[in-house]
Image 1 (spheres, rainbow, N blue to C red):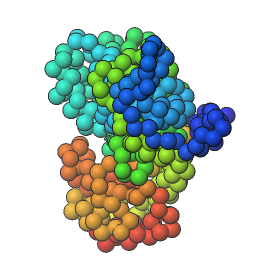
Image 2: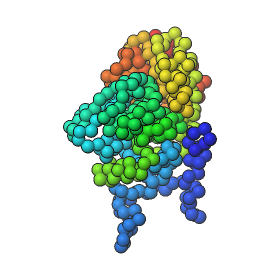
Image 3: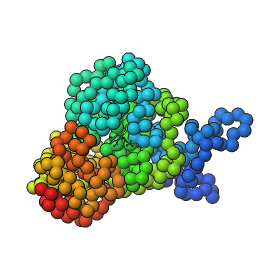
Image 4: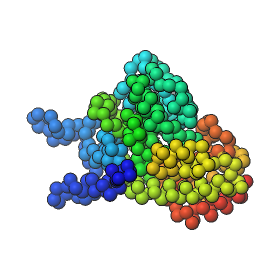
Length: 370
Ligand code: PLP
């Protein structure tokens, strides 16, 4: 960790190299293995591909470094979200979820977990710290929330949940560990979809869960091994490679997003904007307290759904796609999936294009779409 509480990118790049024996490759080998050479007593050795893989382990080491905790890799962000629920909950437990975060988390609760006798309540992210946490076994936070970009005070929530005897989980997908470190704010578990900025090239799905409590980590590893919810070694290898450039990409994306947001805020075609880095944003003060960066997602509302679709379709440097965090800027109208947003609301995910090429394209296309 650096002096200002950020994960160290230099340490990250040398984690593997420092542990190498003479003659070993600097780059991580991809290990495709279901069986391991295992004569006699198996204790302490890799035994089977569902429980052990050196490529996963190298990836988990990097994620663990970034989170300042032990990390467990999962084959998608949703698998990472599902794991603590199924590993830690019993029938009769109560869970608090955001009413406005990533919608598949709510589907998981409604369609799968409710059938197992777990009850769920919901609360908007912006008011999450209000209303108490008594009786909740798990409290699940997503901040900034996708797609609305509302924030909740993670330290406040985690403190209250702990005094009520529950555990706080934070979905940190929209920020990455370079933008926010929820475990340092008091959360018990942090998880994320590494499909987004950590993967960064729109070619893999992956997720991870990290915690500092050895019992929680053991429960998660046990769940993964027994359920078989395991990542593919090749995807883990791709993610490992991508993590080496995460800080570089994330820094560019956040800087560009900050300038783009400032310019969009005064653009005549933009009716409303959300970006935690803007001084006028309702979450700005909280963002400045708990986040190291303001992120690469910008929420902008145009005059109508048609104007939003025209903007997305016409901009040469925007891919019309769901998901975010890739090197290519992308955008989508979230109303098309039924999110509780205005028809003209666009989730703009800034990528790695140079600002001096991206901004003129956004500016021109916005004006034409109005
Ligand atoms: N959490 C958040 C905040 C997300 O936005 C997403 C996907 O968009 C997920 C979790 C799920 O990740 P995945 O698609 O890798 O399963």
